[in-house]
Image 1 (cartoon, protein in one colour):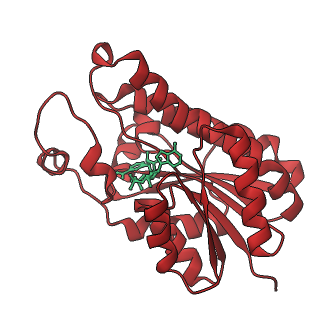
Image 2: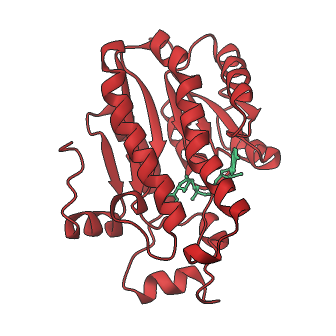
Image 3: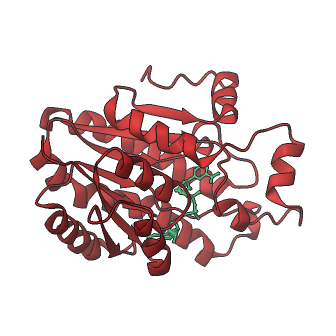
Length: 254
Ligand code: NAD
């Protein structure tokens, strides 16, 4: 069987890096895409030699998506089976305190970048169907909202909507569209998540509220299962599962 290929945005850090390692261990070729070149090289060094390529990509740049996917397919030997639309940034703060620039940047990276990724991925996924997959990182904040991070939450509801819409739209092409719904995951994102309500460290606040921070390896396993399984959304972490249950949101029933 030919080696399969996954293209991962946000591959220089956190969830993207962990998923790169998981698919690398599974024998896949991994295209690592990010704006952080040093981080991409660190991820590549964790993968078997000759099994990855790095692509500088700002997900807000539609033309750069085509270039990066083309270069990845060339390095991988011709095809791309999974595009993992994962790059994202945190944004906290009360709605009235956010500047127009902060709002625009968050929408551009977390939502428009994911839409661009879907557009650019389509011809590649269609060519490798059936069994190809667009995997998006949404968030538990895309299930029940996130007081104090409303704009971030809006983008993640949007990613969830895109997943459900495209899964239907692309079904006849044999392309699956899936999303991950992680709650708090131990990644560098937690170091940068701004919280203007208090200077308290986010980890302290999360644990103080009786919630858990989940090891990043769980997301990697969830990504592997999502690509190989039938569930449209995968909740990751106890907090995500508990909150989905409390809000009576039924993933997979959609
Ligand atoms: P992270 O900060 O470790 O990694 C994010 C990566 O995205 C970084 O390497 C960064 O350079 C890259 N990136 C940022 N802007 C970019 C752009 N314009 N173009 C290309 N790459 C860009 O964070 P993470 O925790 O691994 O987050 C990955 C995804 O998971 C995000 O979409 C985030 O919203 C989501 N998420 C994270 C958590 C969590 O608790 N960590 C929970 C739910 C969802």
